[in-house]
Length: 420
Image (cartoon, rainbow, N blue to C red):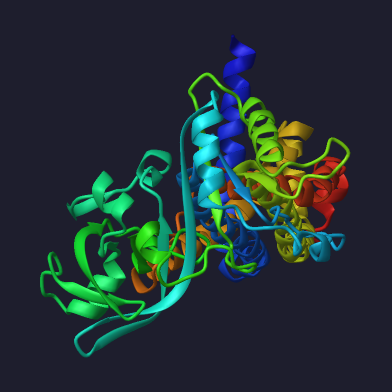
């Protein structure tokens, strides 16, 4: 017990010696902090930006549904140079007839819907929105993916089946066409035809890979097919199929493959002329991308941390040289080697951690400024804060160990002679 109390007392005295040295040598302290501050700022700022981007992208992927499969002409691919686009280009687009067959035959699916998106101009009186995302959907679209409305309603069965001229529009369309007026019941022009607004989508922000629902116009596909050819090669249509709660994506994929091959009358030896995509492909692709980004972040900040570490080591060697006589006196009065070692290690670690905290404070201020000025939700997470502090402490420990070790090994007689 007595030894424990002595150790705690020596630990406290080491801490006080270190703090005093830092306060007295302000210029030296500032120079030591600079490298670590820049290094932590470089690493954690990169991680903060890409964590925010990753969070936004994953939220966007989750809105598509992890248990939703997409029957399409083109398979999703993430990077790579061996994508045989010339083969996929010859494939036919999914059709409404194939959707009907999937709905009739599938036992593993809970709901399925046809959708096709195009960029078209949307007008109301003199106002116009160019390149609006016009999405034509079958009636079950709202059962496959949630539709969040702030006002109005979704299409009725009669409106979807009969191809009535009705639309649900996003917040950007409302803002650009109606300038504060109530759009409900108004008639906008799509495909040159008047369409009644029956619902307003909740504002979402730019989350869906740069293609926000805020710029979207939903129409019944049976209305849109009067103005577009659904069998066009480059249309990009998809049949979205949601699995039942207890059915895995693999089971649903196997069933859909069998249904599609049967509908398209493919021979047993023939390749599939369709793709069945799922959001895990995107998630896996982003996992690889963010691993690379993480490595780049460490490389960018690593050089600054290396310079900062050498700076702390150099300053600590100077500090040991200046305080050699003081070390000799402390040893002559009974100070143990570990007391001298801890004294200088504390100083190095405190310097490094303080520099890291300064870098984190700068990042925090910048995240608030960027989030307020732009449509980005940057957040300095607790994980990144702990990472910054931890890395700072390790750099300080590594940089300060050799100077502290050399100080602890000084001969007290020789050390005291340095005053003369």
